[in-house]
Length: 187
Length: 299
Image (tube, rainbow over all chains, first blue to last red; front, side):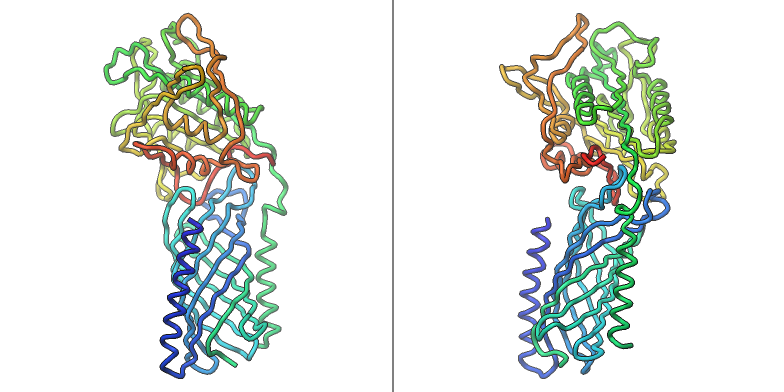
């Protein structure tokens, strides 16, 4: 299942890359493509009804995102893409563990470039979650705030904080990652 | 806002979230006490045509008890069997009638501490449609009475401390699995129900071949459950029966579990193992994020 999700994102990335360069071939807009990977902590906040001994259950999480970038103004751009994450079992504490799962879904992201190096993005996704052991599917929205610091022409350090809004509980993913991008973009 | 301030805000938020990694900071909980209640019936010489003899239930329960005891040597095992042509045990607390089962469940639940685990295992008939359990009656040794799904779940929902897991190898046992919904009055985060089949399916028995031509009956589901925790049936040569056909001693031993990960066995990993290997019936487990730990080297 993890391999399947990874394959889906990679194939989608290739398609997005093709679309990006097809669109950019005939106009002067800022158009680009980005691929990013991130890794960090996934914190599930149990509801009162979960009767959990801990206020927060922590997992590890890793994800891969691919998107097409469309420039709107000099400092403002929009990304459309796909994200996929794997989240491990929560750390062992007492007799309860929260189950591992895969997340996959489309994302839309709005980025404002404060200057040549730093930008801030607001990201919204609709995630399909699959518990890897019970194969249960659920869907919910995710919102994320992402700081980005350009390291070189094509690479940036990203620090996303995402909030998953499920019907029964909320989770916060705090990650750090690297974004690789190509195409015309803020200079 | 300059970039330094923004970065600082992001870092502070990240730090706050990381510091709430409670599992790493909180005091380690006490080692759990594991209590197991095994209920099994073979319906030998049943007077009710609906309840045909089941050849694997008693061995399933006894091997389950031995396997769980081998996994956690401090496990307390309680047994309630209606087995073979043994004389009626009406007077004992261990005869599996409805009232005695519910009383035993209630008394074990009452002894649990915060971090204790109570495993209830049932192997026997389940009524078509309702999934209710066909348990022994104290009127005669070859007649049976009904333990309703609701009655058993209501008893388990009295859980005040600790964690409970119901493992049911019976037909239509999916009826016992509450939905992950806070409005479902039978959903309880401290109770995990693991059924051998869906609410509309039979649960089957099979024969397994041991060395030297020995064959054993087992529930298909229980056999895979035992396999998942590392149980090896052995060659059957260590088994002993009494004159009434009562299985006094089971053979077999515990090897390395194929589902153990980082020294821990969870019920969902067993569920995943069983689900991938079972045919004709589909096991169910309570959905949602919460899983329970059966064993950990780090306890």
